[in-house]
Amino acid sequence: MREFHVVALAGKSGSGKSLAADYLASKGVPVIDGDMVARDVVAPGSDCLRLLAEEFGTEILLEDGSLDRRKLGELCFSNSSRKERLDAIIHPFILSDMKRSFEELGNKGFKYCVVQAPALIESGFQSLSDRIVLITAEREKQIERITARDGIEEKAAGMRLDAQICEQRLRELADVEIENNGTKEEFLSRLNSLRSLFSEWFSDKIK
Image (tube, rainbow, N blue to C red; front, side, top):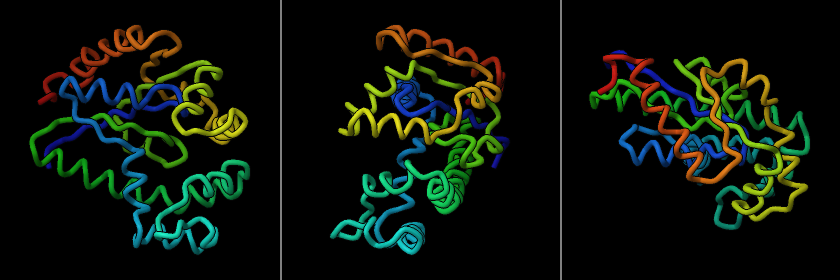
């Protein structure tokens, strides 16, 4: 595989990472959805799901053998030690899957990709990233988006945010920060600057 570069799209839940990733993908940027990878590695019958059930009990499984994400969230997002055990199990599987995707893209001739990275520091993904773009939003906006997206109460959304890494630590790692507190149109307009940044960062390395 030729030299390949990775841009991590980081930010707390509800910040707008998915919207940013979708927009960049619509402009032809190769994008890997970290949330989708996380879902794939816990598919029924997977080694990751088996380890999770051994650690947290079969109560985290639905009748069809798939993962009950809401139940797992209730168990882990309110308990830091359980959250750490969850991360220790699932993140190595996610990183392994990511590396395979990088190799596939590199073999197809791509020079870089953007990865929607929901747990940049917790997973250790920053070590695989050449550049980090941080998406930020006010806590009120984040909670509003999480409750609408996941159908959970504001308290549960707040607990989920509190269980995630401190945003200041993400700022210390980020190469650029894009705020998402206004309208969708305003946010997409700011994202346009990223395409120029990719050219600047990777120069002739872009496909």
